Length: 399
Image (cartoon, rainbow, N blue to C red; front, side):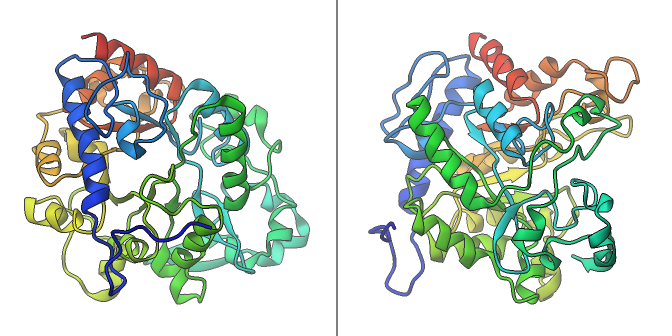
C-alpha cells in the first residue's frame, strides 16, 4: 500500500504542480514530434530513439509521443474490455491500455464494461435465469432499457461472457463472442503486474470512472473504491503507471484528493454538459471548459484532457475536416496534455475525406487521418487499432 505524496496539502487537497511538471515534459516532447523529431519526452526533456522509451522512472513524461492508447484494449479486433482485448493491445505495442471503464456490481466490486447496461456487450439475454433483471432506468437523464451491473453480484456477472458491441462494423470480432468473461479491475491490476514482469517493461493502464454521479446516488460511489484498490496495489502515486479519467470534472476533483495519480478530464462535443454539472445546476458546457480560463481551472486539479477529436479538428456538414481549433495550443499553455478519442479504421468512423467506399466494415485511409490529427500537436490518441496507430506514428516521426 502506497503512502501519500509529499505534495499533499494539509487540508487534503493536492497541489498538482509536481504532476503537471512531469506531464509538461510530455508536452514539450509532443512539440518535437510536430517538428518531425522522433523521440520520447522524459523528466529531463531528453529524447529517446524513434518513439521508444522504457516507461520507467519518469512517470507519464517518459511515454512515447504521440502516445498510442489502446481504446478498451485492441477493440478493433476483439470484444472490448476483455483480458483478450487488453492483451492483444499490449502485444501490438500500445503504450497504454485503456483497461477498465469502471462500473460497480451490486456487492461493490469494480468491473470493466463500457456501460453499466450490459445487454449489448454480454450474452446476458441468453441467460433465462436473469430474464427478470431486465429493466428500464434513467441513466444520466436518458431512459435506458436492459440489464445493469449494479443489479448483479460479481459471482453472477462471472457466469456471463463478453460479446462484440458493434457487430455490423466488426463482424470478424463475433468469432470471439463467448470466449472471455467480464474482468474485475483488481484482476486488471494483477494482469498489469504479471505482464510488466513478463515483458520487463512497465505496462500502463488508463481506467475511466463511468457515470460516477449516477452510482453515488445509488450508494455505490466509485472514486473511493478505485482509490482503495490503487492504494492496496501501491499504484496511487504521481509516477504510478495508472492514469485516471472521467467525463465528470467533479469526479476527477474528488480523485485528486484521494490519490496522487495523473488525472484527465474527458470532454464531449461542443455544447454538451458534463452530467455532474447537470445534476448540480452548473450551467457551464464543454465550450466553457475549453476556454483558456476553463483549461486553467482544469489544470488546477488534473494533468490532462481527453477531448473528442472533433474538438481538435471540427468537421463540416459533409463530415470533412475543417481547420484545427486552438485547443491544442491553449491546453499546452495551461500545462495540460491532450489524449483525444477515438481513432478507428472503419469508414463510418473516419472523416469523410478519408473514407474508401461505403461498406460499414471496410477500412478507409486511417493512416491519412492519423497524420492529420498528429500534425495538430496532440500528445497522443485513443485508438481501437493500436497497430495502425503505431505505424502511423512511425511515419509521422520520420517526417
